[in-house]
Amino acid sequence: MAEVRNYARLWPLVVAAAGVGGLAFAGWRWTHPPVVEEIDPEDVDRTPVKDPGPDEHYEAVRPHLVDEFKSYPGVAKAESPIIIRAPQGMRVPIVKVHHEAGAFLSKGDVVVSFYRPQIDDAIAKAHKEGRSDDETRFRGYLDFVDLKAPCDGVLLSLDRQEGEVPVDEGIGVFTMADKSSFRFVVQVPGDVQRASMEISTKFVVELADEKGSVKGTVVSYDPPIDTDVPVVLALEPHEGIEARLAGTVRVATGRREAGLFPKSAVIKRGEASFVRVYDPESKSIGEKSVLLGGEIGPDVVVLSGVFAGDSVVVPGKKAPQ
Image 1 (tube, helix red, strand yellow):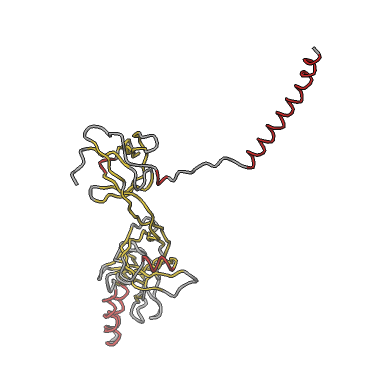
Image 2 (cartoon, rainbow, N blue to C red):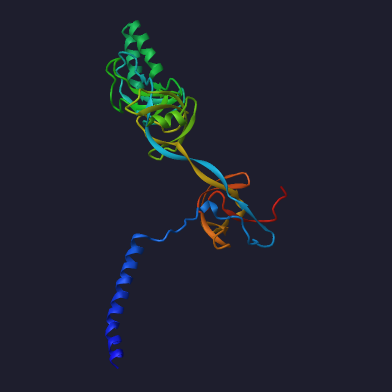
């Protein structure tokens, strides 16, 4: 019995030793974590092993590059505006203004009309008094009773209103710009200008104030401002365009990777688009939501959701290679 009691007294020591050993092992594992072998996604076999179904086949998403765009603000300018004046000495009030600033004018359109009875009275009085030179001069004013646009273009400003009288040759009645004289100046980073806005490149300018859009062509560059370059576009004739009218130009700023696959693979649900895709990890077929770009022949550009190398399910049997 004495020996049994001696062994019983040793049990606490055995338990304590085991605890110390456990702590030591835990500390060693803390400082020596197990090495986990990482698997490169490229090493995963992506070849589908599941049959997609009758009258269907897989096609790999093909790599494709798409342009990235940014809209840059700018402003319309009129080069060499034309000031239209009444004849010197024709001090006759304006009785009617036919167009508002910003109107597109054809050559010969009447812009303002002067009070003709005053001119007729002056002619009759000069004739009665024998002032032939004055009579001739006053008769010349009749050609300007209706002051007309000298060319096709845009009415930039009305410099005189109804009831006003031009007092001398130096004061214009209205100002216009030839239809081919409008430019749009947009400031872009130098690298964007060099990559996407070479001379003769065509763009669409979206005008402010609900004035629509107008086509423009790069014709020159203004001096650089720091690292930016003001690009000058010549604009086509457009109704309602005017100087200092704001607008924007959408310019390609770079390229990014996208994908390409047959558009027949797309499943539409309302505004959303989906494709059926093979998952190499679970070896199953599932649906993925995709963001699509433009169409290229029988294919469609995919911007996100699936990527180059993914296998999408396409209706119909695969054409022989």
